[in-house]
Length: 232
Image (cartoon, rainbow, N blue to C red; front, side, top):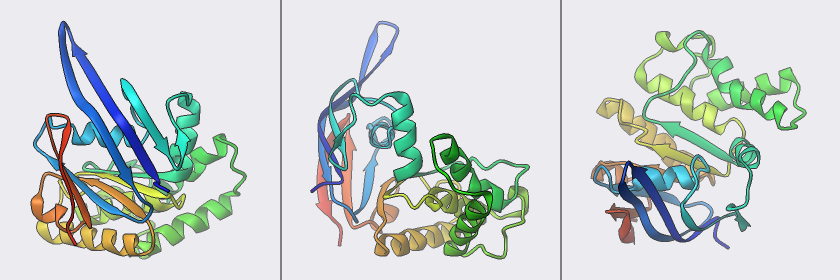
């Protein structure tokens, strides 16, 4: 059974009298454990697709099932709960709280989970955040503020934050866009390790070399899937 299943997803943006069809009947199936790269030129719809699959946006029409659960009728609060419990997000900009150290940045999703009914103690949250930072190789940087970390280290903190709730799917939008080639390669190596541990990864990138590190590649053009093939 597919972890992600879409049928004829359409997303339309309106700019005055102009209608922009960002997604044009996208049908897609992603199995658990895949590492999928979504590529395409700027404006091709790749980030729009990622945001809809991550429940950060809603389609204009079409169907989307997440782990066999239809998402069309979910309330905003139900979407937020699913994101917090099952999905992790990594963006080009790290979105770290500048006055909080790495440990407290990573703990934030667990703090939000309490408002959705989770019953973890502060000590449990602390231990989970420490384990996530250790998982990305930053156990010695837990007390550092973001401005005391390199770009690659800040992105690792963001990855640890995305992993702390043990999500089933990791969504990454241009995750190496603000990194030099060495740090970018390290982050992609980390993605490969996480995928080998069973984490499903969907990554948007404009870089063909980066896309080649995934196991499957989808190329988009004008809101449609132009090609879909295995890379390995």
